[in-house]
Length: 126
Image (cartoon, rainbow, N blue to C red; front, top):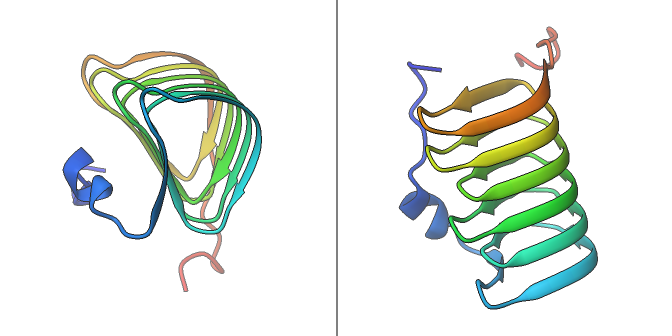
């Protein structure tokens, strides 16, 4: 993914509208989100996101994620199913199963996962 311009954490934070679970929030349950979501607090459960998910530096998720793109700068444990791209930042930690079209792991990231990439079909290229 060297020829793809990646978004910085600040660029992602400026994405509007975005749903936010702040760093002082602890939540357990299931979330269905029609847009983007950022997790800076602690979340346990299933996340079904039509847009992008950002796990911030102070974020911790234990559960299952389905989303378009994922940017992981905090901690994740569980199963991630992403339609497009996953970026694991230099302080990101992932444990579990990871499925996506493209996966970028920055130097310093900690990954203990089963990784599978989705193959592009001719329909995806249109």
